[in-house]
Image (cartoon, rainbow, N blue to C red; front, side):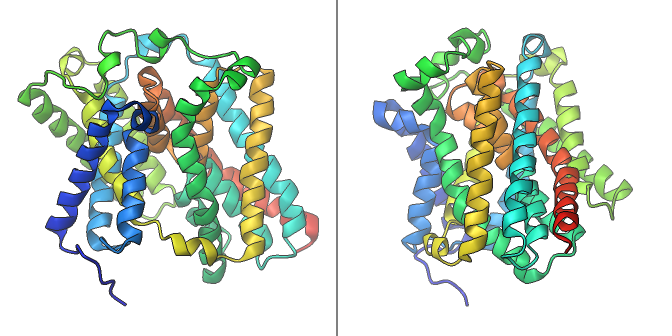
Amino acid sequence: MEQTTFLSSPGSLIALILGIIAFSLWLQKFKITSLLGPSLLVIIFGIIASNAKIVPSMTELYGILAVYCIPISMSLFLMNIDFSQLKDMTKEPVISLISAIFSVGVIAFLFGLFFAEKIPDGWKVAGMFVGTYTGGSSNLTAIAIALEASNETIVSANAADYVIGIPSMILMFAAPAILKSSAFFNKIWPYKHTEDELYGYDLEHKSLFSAKEWSIMDIAMLLTVSFTIVQTANFISTTFFPESMYKSAIRILLITTVSAIIGQLPFIKTLKGKLDLGLLIAMIYLTIIGFMVDISGFLTSTASITIFCACVILFSTLLHLLITRFFKIRYEFVVISIVAAIADGTTAALVCSNGKWKSLIPIALISGVLAGLIGNYLGISVAYMIKAAIGA
């Protein structure tokens, strides 16, 4: 059934999306709204617009914009990499990412043993949850296909992930501001980056969302380079890996690698606005995510599978916190690894942008790609281990 909403034409929806972004950026002038950051604000305004029936929760336009916004913003973020600033940041993010993936696998296996016989295809669901919390929803679907899960199981698992995952991600977007201002947290977790480390040792970090001097040539060149990289990666992945279940991962790896390498060229380094332009395009995608959130959907998923999902995300996060605290990992890396695992590298990069952790954006993107790749293997392995343990 077609939705009846106040706005429905592509032109009006694009105008609203851009208006929400502009308004969210304008709100950064005020202390309270600046704590939330523009990325979280556009999601909130998107949810309000959708559930107030101002815009549809799903339309073809959203899919078209998402196809371009996600890889283009990723490419722009990655071209902002300066490898010379990453030489001292390799050990901690690796430990943190390994901890995040390990924690999800262990907790999904343990709770999977309990829930496997209480949920149809429970052992498959366990593997699917490992996938979605080490690489996002695309991993959930990939593992579901690999395990030959039924359509009903896939729908139920996605619904549970929707109910638990969205509030978790909103909390993650708010985490940088909350953790920075919490005296209690800073007492029990004193390990963190300095302001200069977070902002990439530049002098422009204090005005991340304020006016900048851009050249129209900078913008034109950045968009040309990023679109070329993305389309080249699309061509290679579809031409040489047309039937591979890892086609999307290969595509993302190509975008990641080429963008990072291109970003080291002296000419690309001189182009201004990579971070800001990437954030603007990514915020279009985040607004659409807000549009797609149906609050009534929170009440429709099966209770058992939702509880299973909540246990996986809650206890894996707790185990991850214990491990990283033991190794004295700076908390910014811990947040990045959680978001990179639960969602993807792009979302983790957006959390970095929201928290003004400029220098950590490349690490966030790379973490997401690695987690996604490892997640497919781990999810399938966990599922079959549970199957063997329960004799299914």
